Image (cartoon, rainbow, N blue to C red; front, side, top):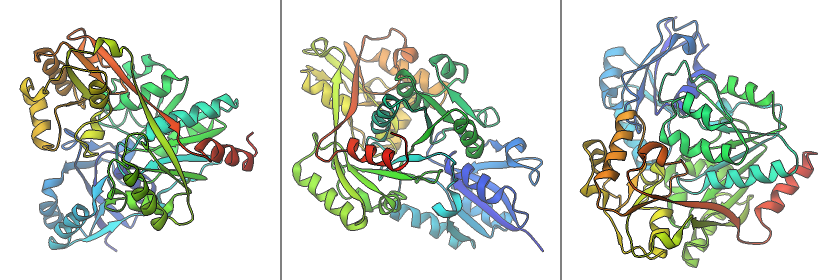
Amino acid sequence: MARKRVVIMGAAGRDFHNFNVVFRDDPQTEVTAFTAAQIPGIARRSYPPALAGDLYPTGIPIHDEADLPRIIREDGVDTVVFAYSDVAHIDVMHRASAALAAGADFLLLGPRRTMLPSRLPVIAICAVRTGCGKSQTARWIAARLRERGLRVGVLRHPMPYGDLARQTTQRFATLADLNAADCTIEEREEYEPHIAAGGVVHVGVDTARVLAQAEAESDLLLWDGGNNDFPFLRPDLLIVLVDPLRPGHESTYHPGEAVLRMADIVLVAKTNAAPAEDVRRVADAARALSPSASILLGASVVTLDDAAAVRGRRVLVVEDGPTLTHGGMPHGAGYAAALQAGAAEIVDPRLSATPEIAAVFAAFPHLGPVLPAMGYDAAQRRGLAETIARSTADLVVSATPAGLQDVIGQARPVIRARYAFAEAGTPGLGSALEAFLLQRGLT
C-alpha cells in the first residue's frame, strides 16, 4: 500500500516537533518536505538523517513556503500539515485554500497527539500573542520555585535556526554556553535572563530527548512557550497571558485562541500600561472563551539602568525583535521608557538602516521609529550594529533582554530598559502557584 505523502508547513519549531512525535516512525506516511516561513534564511536546508530516522536515510528537504502549490502538484502530496504559530485566523485559511486548490487536504494537529507526558509536574506559560509578557512571567515563577528549594528545569520553545544536528539537545547554564553554541540574538533574548537569575535552560529540536535531559536534574519543569503556541509538554498547570494593549487579539490568532480555551489560569498582563476599559475587555473575552479558568491580573514594571543619562538626549531605541515582528507591535517597553525618562528625540533607525535592516522595515510596515533586535544570522547582526553606528543618536536605549553590547560593541553607549512581572491584584499569581505546589506535594 502506498504511503500517504505529507508536507509540513512550519518555522523551525512546531513543524519539527510534530514530525518527531507523529510522523517519524510511521511506516504509512512519507513526509516529502517541510516548508519554511516567518524566519529569514531557514529554507533551502534539510532536516538531517540523524534526526529524521530510519525511514528517511537522506533526510527531508526544507523549501520556501511560496513554493507550496508547486510542491503539492509535482510531488503528489496528499496532506499539508500546518505547524507554526501566531498567525491570524484569516491567514491560516488563506494557506488552507492554497493547499486545497492544489489538491491536498489541510490538517492541524492538536494537543492530544503532540504533547509529551512528563514524570515530573509541569507548569506551562503560554499566551494569545507574541509579546504578551510570557518570559518575564516565567522568570518570576522560576524565582519563586527556586526560593522553595526546588530544582527548576526551564524548557524553551526551540529556535533551531543553525545546524540542526548540533541542536538536537542543548543545555544552557552559563553565558559561555551561549557563545559556544553561537546563539542568535533571538535565542539570547530568551535564554540570557534565565541564566542570569541562576536558572538552566533546556532546548532542542528533539523534545523527547530534551525532556529526558531536563527530568534527570529537575524536581519540576517550567515550559516557557514561544509565540502563541500550545505547549510541547502536557501541562499540569497552564497559565495563559492576554494583552490589554491588543484587545481583540485573544480570539483572532492561531493557535492563541485554542490556548486560551485550554487555560487553567488566565493572566491579564500589563494592566499598569493599558486603559482600564481594555483591561476589562480582554478579561471579559477570556472569561467567555475559558469560563472555568481563574482570571488574575499582572503588571509589567519597566526600569532604566540610568534614566538620568537619557534626559535631553537623542536616543535610538532597540526593542525585542519578535514582539515587534511576529507580535505586530509598533514599539515596546524601550520606547515608552525613553519618552518617560525625557529623551529629547527618538531617532528613527530607518534613516541609517543597512539593506539587511531596511528589508525588515519593508516586511513589517507597522513598525514605529524603533529598531527590532534582528539577528537571525551574522549578516543581520552586522546590519544591526552598522545601523546603530550610522545613526545620529547620542545613545541607545535597549529593551531587548539580550546583552546588546556583545553584538554592537562600543558603537554607542547603551542604557538597558528592563521589564519584570509584578502581581496587580488579590488573589495573585503567587497564591495560585502556592496552591499548585501544595496540591503536588512540593511545598
